[in-house]
Length: 114
Image (cartoon, rainbow, N blue to C red):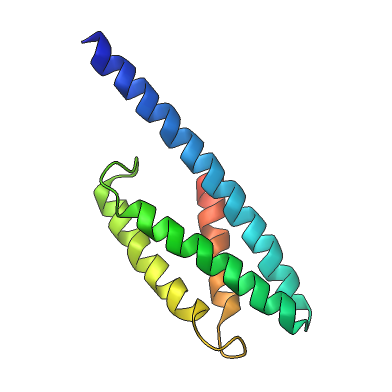
């Protein structure tokens, strides 16, 4: 029984660390996206799209892991959301709806911060 409790506590701590890390990354991406959208620097747009794509692809892969601390239904919903965002991020930089990516990322950052 003691081993099960220790395993639960460890899993719980890892879940909190994961949540905090994801919130920090989302916040940083939102900052980059908002500055990118405010300017007209083509290189900055390409860079933020690459950073966002890397994070969203990584997040999607992590969500597919059955060991991920989020409930299965929430993970499925987030995977579908990740698919939507990734589709935007693989478009031509001038056609990608970065405002949509920013809005989704900001909502998730806010939700993780709560």
